[in-house]
Length: 331
Image (tube, rainbow, N blue to C red):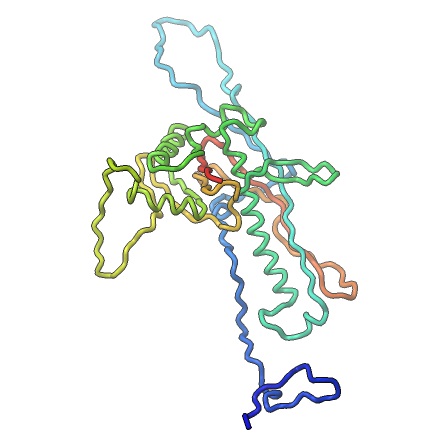
């Protein structure tokens, strides 16, 4: 006769659940695993500012084209230039971000893995909220203003800011040049062209960062390995393999126009309109302005359990679209 080591929690009618295993304790680990990408590289890069209105605005200006004409000796000054005529005002609407939660009275009272209580609900909402902000910043969304009929305030994402043909409220002189945008298969030469175009606008051998999605990161990692042509000369590197390690990652691209640091974008927050997406950003010329800081609000327990929400309000600052670049191609 086999030793009894199991039992049925659903005994037949009129029967009692029996067996030696009825007294066995459960083996439930106290460790809770949440598998989801949480990094917010663009939000982390952006300097923080304070907003004081639903429309956050800033002013941009430019210098006149250099002149080599010269001045005749003894010539009087007969005409004068308004040095501020070229200024423009750029702006972005704030966006409200909110995540709500509900924990029943019983769930709050029992001991659970995690645990699953109000404090953990608030903490999880905050983590989700950061990803919401990152997704909005990286999106192709245009800005919108609250109309009281279902259209909320929304911020303009980088995908819409970095456009050679717009947005319509950005004067043409301050838009991202077409040479700074790549809309077809990216090559090493194309990336150099983007960096050169950005340098022609800023004149700075700056500290640029490319935040790329998975597909684009793979493309850049294959630079200099295989160009796909029979006439190409490969770039050969000798590597000490005594450590039994081969490095195939490209995290720093040293170009004629400065160093480009390459970072992985959050795969849950990057736009999915195109297969290959990346933003070449100069952190000096972006920012994030907060109107209402992130905070938690508890609501009345009406009998079912503790309720509340975590929210914040802010917007993306693109100080000048000229200082950045974009890569978006494939479908």
